[in-house]
Amino acid sequence: MKRIVIVGGGYAGMGLAKALDRRFEVRMIEPRDRFVHNLAAIRALAEGPPLLRQLAVPYDRLLRRGTVLQARAAAVTEQGVTLADGRQLEADYVVVATGSRHNGPFKPQTENAADFLSAGAALHQRLLQARSVAIVGGGPVGVELAGEIAAAHPGKALHLVSATQQLCAGFNPRLGERLAAQLRARGIGLKLGVTAAGLSEGPAVLALSDGTLLEADLVFASTGAVPDAALLRALPGLPFDTRGRAQLDPWLRPQGMQRLFVAGDVGATGDPMTAIAVTRQVPWLAGLLKSLAGGASIERLRPYRPWPVQPLVVPLGPSAGSSVLPLGREGMVFGDRVTSLLKGRDLLLPRYRRQLGYPARDPVAAAAVPLPLENRS
Ligand SMILES: Cc1cc2nc3c(=O)[nH]c(=O)nc-3n(C[C@H](O)[C@H](O)[C@H](O)COP(=O)(O)OP(=O)(O)OC[C@H]3O[C@@H](n4cnc5c(N)ncnc54)[C@H](O)[C@@H]3O)c2cc1C
Image 1 (cartoon, rainbow, N blue to C red):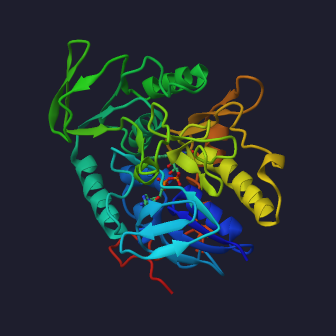
Image 2: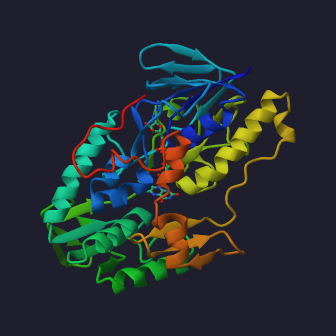
């Protein structure tokens, strides 16, 4: 049986490890003690516990045959991975899926999920007390955050500051127009084509590039994800795109590499940095690796093709929002009902909890009183 080491247990690494568990000797390397479903972290901040407590799920039931090693990779080659504690793991294939970091409070900053949950709970308390909130960043996270806060706390004065005129720039412009109309209808003040200086958590007075001042009790900076590409940057001569993602050949390998693959946010796959993109990359890469392990030659296998039109689903609370789906040449924009069905109503939490081998909803963690995290068993 071929050996594969997967570096990173986020959406890409975790999905790939699961898909290959029966056919490979899988070892997945992940420093965090739990998977954190950051797709639901925005509403969890707005609503607080008990949703927040559902997001951190142990890795212990992910694989039946393979192993999840709680460790950090320090170096990768085509032949294997060196861990930070010096251990060497040899492999027939290596996949780097180290993802990205985000400057908002929605991804864990440490390896201990309990830190993420307590920071989220503290921020939720600050949100409850704030009368005015400013969000800086008009990408999907900033827009969703504005919509979720408005849905959960309709009385707050909310402003969204976006450096681009179009919200969710880079996706179908009709999506951005529709989201802007939905946010305005909820009374959210939009400052489009404007940047903010002097960012702090607040209370703060932000100096905006249009010459105005914006006062807020609480400020969220949400200015985009940064690829976590340190391992790939250590490989000699590898080119990176302007976002800092490693450039890849048509089979998602860094230039000149035969047995090292890249998936998810850290690779310039042709997709944006989204979990929806990962749901296209993972089945393709799993199929490719199975064929290679069966003796196929890679030149005869279908290269990766990114989404022809980039999909995006932006809930603004459980029953509202807008989405663009890859239908037709430019994609089709949908409203509340489709967005709610695709993500808004359950935030895909049951899907990822089940993928990790846990029930769709944990009744203990969902209790509003402070109880221990879900136990390993
Ligand atoms: C608030 C928020 C909401 C989002 N909502 C959506 C959404 O609704 N829909 C959507 O499609 N996308 C959404 N995204 C984007 C989505 O989260 C990312 O595209 C997705 O996380 C990418 O998955 P990944 O596996 O590539 O990386 P990640 O999820 O970042 O996982 C990478 C993993 O690698 C690990 N790692 C890093 N370095 C090492 C190392 N040296 N050794 C071992 N492990 C390492 C990390 O600990 C991490 O667990 C959202 C992002 C944010 C921040």
